[in-house]
Length: 320
Length: 313
Image (tube, rainbow over all chains, first blue to last red):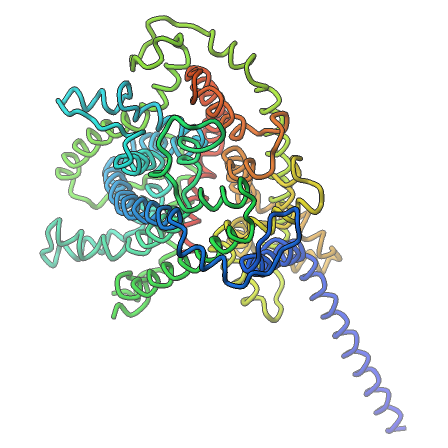
């Protein structure tokens, strides 16, 4: 009898374990069902394209004929293509001009907004609205406002006796002009920095003041470290964005029928990649270009992350 | 000193969430009651003066554009605030020169399909990450975040080849269909929000016999309305401004979306012999106007989404 109870107990135990396992399997299955859109999308539209573009970069492929394996010929060609050097140079200059100005302008305006009291909401709206403008329209505005003869910018410069350059045609001034125009859409960075500024605890300023710190000392020792994560975020995001700049410059300087404006000074890397892929159908070469950009962006982001360990102050971590 | 302070993310979310309840005019500005009053007043006067100057600079391109759209061809570049000759001719003409109504319709179709699909799929995935506990969840979510860093150029060509193989190039499908498979940023955004919902609610519903889908669809999703609103507004803006995809996939002018159509107007009226900038200017106003409306409808969501985006960094 005792053995019978024991076997029964074992049996129910086993049954319970089995049903628990089954419930667990059902649970994991529903979890996977919820994740399935992303899993499928990741496999089809991220993982496979990554692998396939790496493969394509080793081939000659024009979409119509099958890819023909050429080894590292595309990468060798990258080194010799003068337009690659040009496009890379343009892109780096643009990014190096844009990122610091972006940070300065957005920080300056965020600091002003932080002191504006109740009216800040109104000004924030005004500063953010340009961000809603379609980039094509921003490209149009660039051509109009920066026009060398009749543009508003040079008209205003003329009031101060400055003879403004031919922003849209002079190769030396095309990139500075595009950078200035891009500052118009600085709104998102302002909002991020304003949120960071407003999250600095007031007590920190108080204790700094008690310790005898003046305005500059407070800015350097309290404000700057506290908003450094937001500043770092803006630098990283805008660097990545700057290296991939396309819409505005493509609208203003490229496309069918556009021979009016000087093109070479505005030939950014993604524009050249786009041309190679979809205008000349050099899919293999364009894939090699894409992978080079991918590696460059990863490397720059990695360097920025390493630098951030020394320069960015994260709350709750040991500052040293 | 650092130990007594809350986590970095908390005050930031607070600063963003708090104005939600305030009227729009005062939104986003928490007063600092502890600043000495005299310096605050002087500082504020200087700040507001500077802000007015910058606000004029930021607003002026809009004003210029709208003003120019009401000027006849010869006066477009006179840079005058008020047109000497006020005319609606440009609006009539742009409607005749370009299939604007069709472009608006195409954009509307893509916008609705893109926004609805990306919201539902991303909410599902976000719920999968927020509610369920399984091995490998952290790694998988890390992968979601990592895909946000990926430059679009790397996947652009094979993605084109996929749609080409499916015979969809030239149709509107590639403009939105990838949204069926969720989007990393929105997954991140909605997961953060869902993590803040009270778990007991869902466990109780489960005990009462609700299915996993029922808990998501009837309880979690309705409660996540604020995060859904952010997603919708962001996606509407994304579609309305997407040029690259339209350049790659849309071939015939009858399938163009607004950004692609505007680009084609720049190409045909802005360069070469026939310069008709007034057409391009007017079309730019028409392309921008809906986004301004969207901004005023979704201002709170946009600002919340922009600030939340920074938190992932």
